[in-house]
Amino acid sequence: MIVLNLIARLPFFVLYRLSDCLFIVTAYIIRYRRQVVLDNLRHAFPDESDTYIRQLARGFYRNFCDLIVETIKLPRMTADDMRKRVTVINGEQVRHYLSQGQTLLGAAGHQCNWEWVPGATLVNGIAVDSVYKPLHNPSSERVMQQIRSQFGAYLIPMNRLPREMVKRRYIPRIIALVADQMPNIPEAAYWTNFFNRDTPFFPGTERLARSQQLPVFYLDLIRNRRGYYTATFILLAAPPYVDLPYGEILNRYRDQLTETILKQPSNWLWSHKRWKHHREEYPKINTKLE
Image (cartoon, rainbow, N blue to C red; front, top):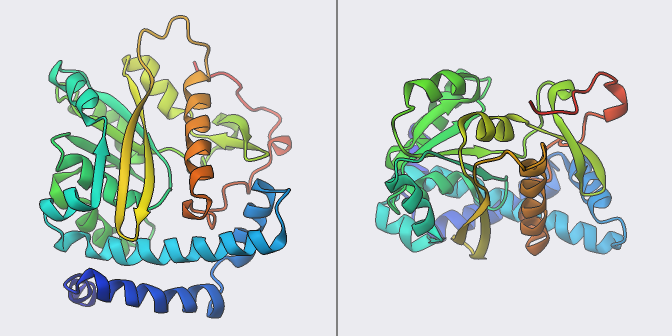
């Protein structure tokens, strides 16, 4: 932790030089999950040349290393730093809902620097509950909790979300989920086509939206240049959901996420083993979200 605190004190231009060095180590020496990255990219872009796929892979590693140093920097950033580096678009619509006492769901993806999103949202006057998947290593988990709670984000481990929903039911805020992770129980997932492959999605976003009658916003995150982003809130769906077919909220999320990724393909987390499960292995898949 002492080392991380010292690194966090470095100015951005020095951190990005460190990121450049880390890129060489990660991409060419360690070759971190290289086959996973290349396989995912080839399935996602089957008509592209091998040269283009390798170019995307290099871009992924650069983004990944920037993400690491920017996340380390987060505890030393001020509110002004965050507002300068992340421009939030359509925050007024989110704040309007909150002013009416309405809690919202926010669905983001592993695009660009998702670790800055809760902080950027908070410094723009939007209360955030940040739902996350705890790390297995206790020491790493403590470090990430300290980093992620910067600017006052309320952290909720994924397995505690139902009880925290009850505990905080009278607090208007946006409940932020990074919704493109691999579900732990594929049989209970919502399966749909995503980048040319049958893909399981966590059904919780849609179930929660329907059961609690919560509007759902998608967060489109784009890198403008190194260390500078634009985060745009896009309304995916709003209650009542009586006439909305089951699965439509997740389908809309998938479509928006796909659009975001296609704008800057290298900036998604291609090292994630997103497609390690195959639908044919699970004959008892629940196809409904009730």
